Length: 447
View 1 (cartoon, rainbow, N blue to C red):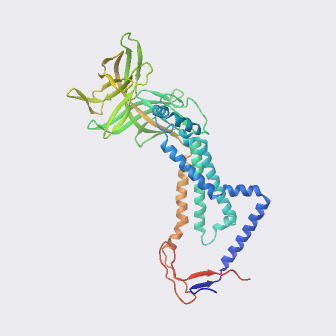
View 2 (cartoon, rainbow, N blue to C red):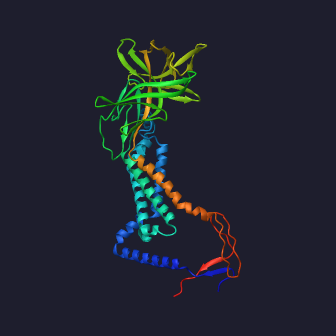
View 3 (cartoon, rainbow, N blue to C red):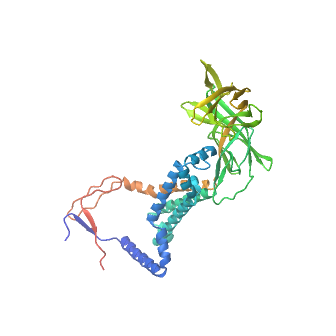
């Protein structure tokens, strides 16, 4: 006996046909399970939504590791090596897992590959259950095409992401004006990291930094930085171009993006007593931002120095009651402040060294022989990037096709049929849900 307020209706002819197709599909799947049990279990496992959830959680975990842990190729080598030296326990546990280059590690590649396979098997099984591509026909053809394109865009996204991680080359290259760097080197200031499936080829390119031009506002605030690069291949000039912030330079698939710039004073160090030469080189000082000001400072990691030596550059300076003050960032009158610290970090001796001058500190004699600029470039070659971009555009178009027909139904007011006792329901426009008085009950088909 039905309660008051229930409305009865018989199933339509389309619902009967859908019920028949569903029973036939279930019988076919049961036959396949009995005939090919291993294949069925494998397909069900690969298309499992639980597997997709686990893989997505793993991707989130890898992304957190890539954001928290220092990554090779994304920071300068000295800072990377110092971090590992300061955290020996973490380094020993995380390095075998490849978490310092997490987006090139085998676990990350396997996760993306399995996500692509999971999406592919889900799509194929859905097509088989719906009778193949014939389900794209009918009154809801646009929505179904959008559904199919969404899954195709996901498969393209995972394929492009896998190829990008497996065949990408990138690295951070630091060059001083007049310096040449071989991209294939893995020591010093050059390290070009390659994906798992990208072959190693030494001596591909020589990069020559010709000049760094910096424009200042009021001699203090840099407003434009331009680096002139020259690419040499087999000893000959292959290309020449300019790199600006947000305006990279591309050659043969390699993209050079400006990261930061600084100063490299040329230091000549001798023993004060014997005059024996110890060092004659440009030293790239780190650039530290402190509010709106910049500090150019670093220490000399030289094995022959018995004390810690810290170098600070004032590109332009002035005197304030016997104290050196920075006057600007444009190198009009550069000055070096050299400090020596003991084992406890206490400054035991210091001195100022103008350009072209000499200074004796302890056992050593320092000569400020010149000043140049250095520039850091992010070098990237990513063959999977075009595939990822195509998949994103395809996905946005697919979402429009999938949900555009629903917009009319979401905000269209539809009358509701009268119930069993003549009561008329009330239709609303709230996100497509019709709140009505009375419940419809579908009876099973009669014989």
